[in-house]
Amino acid sequence: MRHDHDDDENGIDSEIQELMSELQNDAERLSTATEKSGVPDEIKHMVAALADKIDGLASLVR
Image (cartoon, rainbow, N blue to C red; front, top):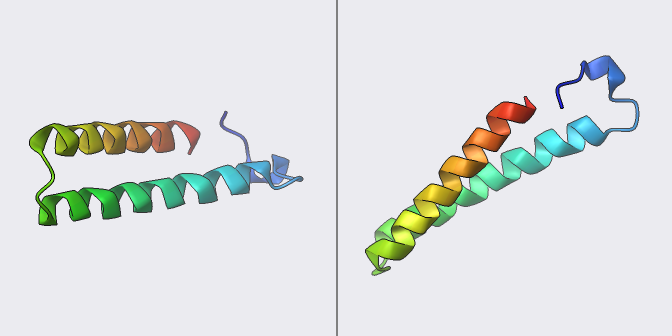
């Protein structure tokens, strides 16, 4: 999946990077929201696991 930026003629790689950044930001906001509210621990763990997977995916596509 790794490409040189010169190969991004159609903007797909740039769009992937932008979407990954948005996913990471959304996951962080969701994690923060679950910590501030009375969300059950099971849900908090699921949110944390999802955020970890998003971070891992983001690392792979960079």
